[in-house]
Image (cartoon, rainbow, N blue to C red; front, side, top):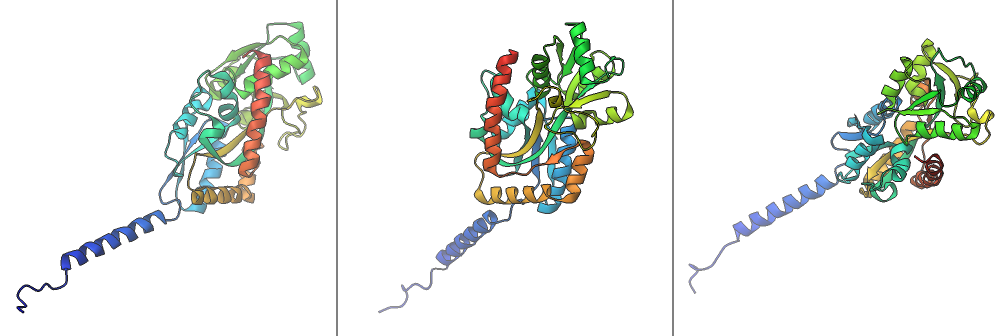
Length: 327
């Protein structure tokens, strides 16, 4: 039998098999690459003091995870603009949301066709901080205390104006709650965000504001604004002489929280890493000190279950308040 027609090893087939194996290895290696392998964008739904909060935490996250966590402030429409963008982002852990109760709890009652649902479209990573608001007035207002301000408002119904970051903001509802409890007639002047509201108060165009403490703390310390009370469940360590509004009207309590979310539903490995490192960062003494000095912010790491339960409680609480205030 002639050997002319016998065939040797199929070199082409061997090359193809080798290439296929290398491609498979590369794919597996790529997917197994530790998170994060590139910069992470963190959309923030609040301006002013929220940016200080976010940058303190995210700067430390960048150091711990070895990639930049870049804060992108998008506070339009009460934070709904930024939240909507993140809800529609790829759930790969490279676009995250640093959201407040204003964007993540209140908006569902204020917008007819909400473009996102917090519990459906987001995966809670951890609550980050909880902070009180503070009631401040322009120095020209002849009120040195909450009692003075209430008495002034009762003597001049419809003449005291208060600013807020916008209709349906936490600051707006905080003032409306006080208005109902104290039985006063004060006039709401909404602005497009905290910064313009503070600017107008500094200029004397409005007389009062209830705002997140980090936003106005420098103006309180400089004497450009007079603080009358805080809205949290206890007095602020930064201003221990300031009473809480609850001391005058039991049951009154308003706080603002910030928390980290990912678009639903990210890989388990990504969420495990994010949750563990967020909690670790918030537990660092240096982070606690920076947050506290920035405006009495209290780090408040939580489990996803605890965070989800808080959001549900806020749904109920703010739904009732918005109904009573006819916002």
